[in-house]
Length: 122
Image 1 (tube, rainbow, N blue to C red):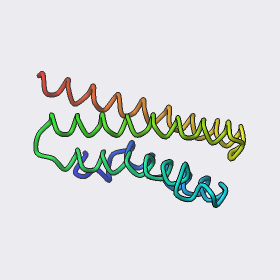
Image 2 (image 1 turned 120 degrees about the vertical axis):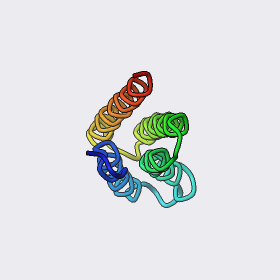
Image 3 (image 1 turned 90 degrees about the vertical axis):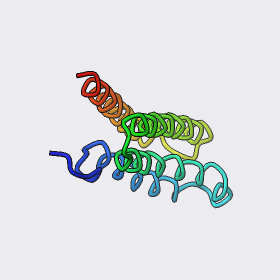
């Protein structure tokens, strides 16, 4: 039973992603402290934050909107990762692993949204 956003696997996985992104971003050049590094961190943090905020709302429409925002932040993060890889800040293997995690979380967000829409229509 889901009694809190903390019970959602997608929230738990996205929290793990935040930790991984902070570790990867910490390896980037200091010159990117307020650039790409900060954008990656903000986008990563936005994913679980929006899942939590949406689940805490009283209306399904608000919840779905926040899940959509989380998905958008996830794709933003994927773009930042690709930029960091192309600039040589992150290695191919690190980037591939994190992009795989992003893909899995994105699928989980989609499944949660579909399930909520289905429940609303019954």
